[in-house]
Length: 317
Image (tube, rainbow, N blue to C red; front, side, top):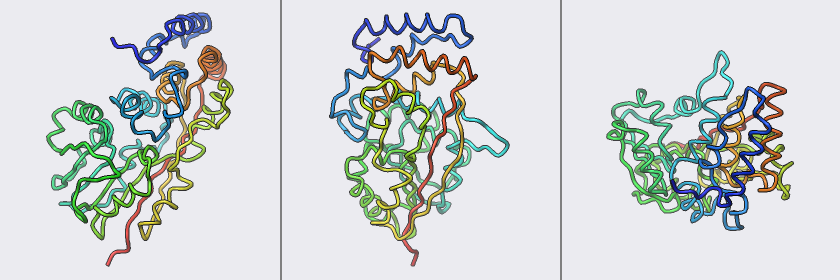
């Protein structure tokens, strides 16, 4: 098995030692050794080029496959509190889509296509859907995830900053939690506007500035750089300022949930799948110990997501 996450074997030994020492007498003792191999890399691997929108780094490390994405998605899928009127994220997003029965839809940055797998039974038979990603490895993951359902879709490697599609041909374009990875957001939105029909809709999901603030505050206690954690350039707070440059109208649908994590491993896996969230190497043991002690005392670690969906269009003639 290729080991490109923790390059320093001593870090693994130290992590296992502290994990056993802290967790052996608690009900939350889990195989955190697996996290050492399945998460991204140590903080010493990071450089100034490894930013949230550095495409070379994203292709080589973060989105070479869907492993990191899956680690993050599983936290929300497994630990989001489900109340009486709760609706999972993907069906919630899908419920906002407005498109003709014979419409053409383009998703940019489709990831592993989990959106379409989860709502496959609801897709109208007349929809023409093209799934794209700038990572060929991610498209491979999408096809594998969809299995036999992949026959229903077209796939293409594509950069949102240079969409290889003719003008005014799409009824709907979807950018699902991906615009904050784009180096030139204005150019990306301009390209989306170009390929949409006059009556078309652009749906762009993103997070807010307060997203997972409880976890970020804890992580920052174990980081030398107190930079507020994971900062993204396209947020619920500033997204409309980008979108209004090209679209006549932009609305925002926000979603309120809470995540209650009662196990250590998924939290550590989430943190280690996102470089900007990682504790410093010499603080990793302390971070894991504090997480485990918090869960042992309170029964869970509470996280408040901040996420939503921008809905943009031009005035219809």
